[in-house]
Image (cartoon, rainbow, N blue to C red; front, top):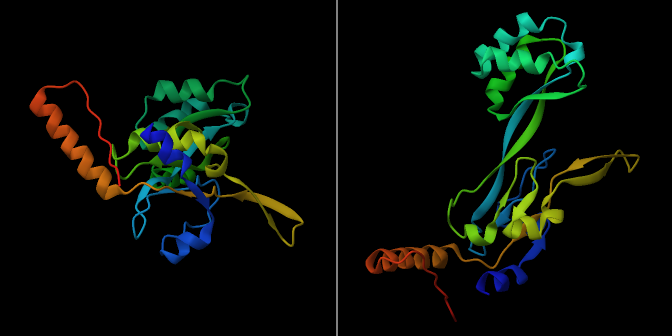
Length: 212
């Protein structure tokens, strides 16, 4: 009931509110919107971290035997696994590895292997770890909200499109930010007290309600 009340009071905002708190998200392609607390300044409860994914067009890879070891040395993956991916000639597109460090991705780019490419990607990260996790929820591998606020406001948090060049063209735009009524200080204090009570009483679980 408490979680439901919090979700109902959430408001979705644009860049202006965050810019006033000096927390305006960068306008970068494919970035899922961030989730903030009601603190001053707002605390980031969910953010997107820039990563990269490596893919291949198997039909365009002329020599998988030579390419696989070169990629394996950089990616730290078994040569056999990479070779198997590169030799799926019946598939127009395959992922080799998802969401790796961008510095590693740049090394792959330098190999200039025909048929192998790098795509900008994003990984969801929760700075507060377990803090309000039952309300914030989480997003899956493909940046789809699966639980909590991430799921409830998935349409707002997801990337959309914006006009460019005087409206003649569109491009992918970052998702909108969500600011909640959650107070991280109260959440942390209540969480600590509930944990202490559980340990003292030997309880399997516990919950707390804060009322004004």
